[in-house]
Length: 407
Image 1 (spheres, rainbow, N blue to C red):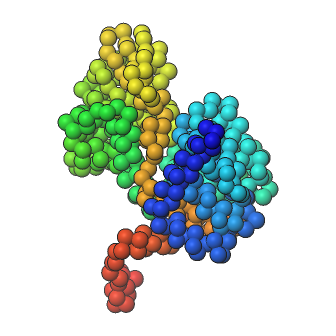
Image 2 (cartoon, helix red, strand yellow; image 1 turned 90 degrees about the horizontal axis):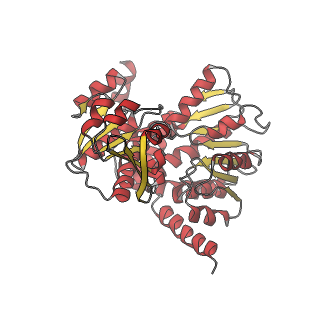
Image 3 (cartoon, one colour; image 1 turned 30 degrees about the horizontal axis):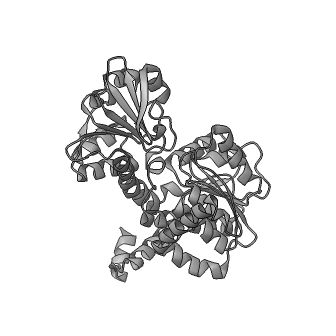
């Protein structure tokens, strides 16, 4: 058996394992593979290509779509999964782990060359390629990241978004679970497996206290770390303090820290002076979508030497003798050095994506702009999740509903 076939076989096993633990997608497949809402539709995906996203691509195919997939990060594609997915009928894969910037762009253009009717974007790179000349067939799409939605809203404010996009990240069943619990668990899973370091008792700095930062801080504290949150939003800083965390500027917090995790969506979160003054052995990890939060270029310029003590970790020695360790090239650490969010979390998020694409198709044509996911999709998926867990909740009586309606 060739190495490629062997790798594809292992990738297929990983996909099967994920599918077994995705009750929401399985329920949607049972329903929508009969209705086939995407018959005749071409859907392009730019997404972190691993086992769970392969399950989403196969679901869309089973619902009638012709699917084209590429990776949304040069280091997050898992080659065995990509090779397994490429053997599936009706799915076209343009992705490889470790592509350079030119290849990355070529893969984006390759999925768009299929002239999609809908897109599913992760970070906004597909949208960026479509701004100049979107195909006539394009009905719109979905964006599932905080960073991507921010880019969409900026484009819409400037009058530069030429088609409708749904802000899936802002759906309650997405950001309350994916961003908080998914990021919180997967970031520390990746850091601990790649470093083999103890978190209990360690000083951890979390830069950014949005939903992702909340999850990262919460899980670090649960593992026994002493957590300091860095924020520029005074309201979030107060919230972090009342949640039990220390609050300080980045330059102050890193002087005594063992770990720094960025989750801000902004560039150069750690300044040059902060890098010079950081504690010896500080580990720098990024949980934001783009590799701009930790200033890698500045770090390399300040270093007198560098080495790779473990796979995925580069140690920079500064002139003052202090060593700073960069994890996963400063890219999305939970996918570069781990498997990304837990299966059950992505089952929820991809259910939101699937039903939002169905909603887009049913409501087309829509005017260009950024749209919220309808609340009924959130409620439907929440009830599906409760059913999968065997849980039941109360409902309002008619009298209680009348009282609330009149309030």
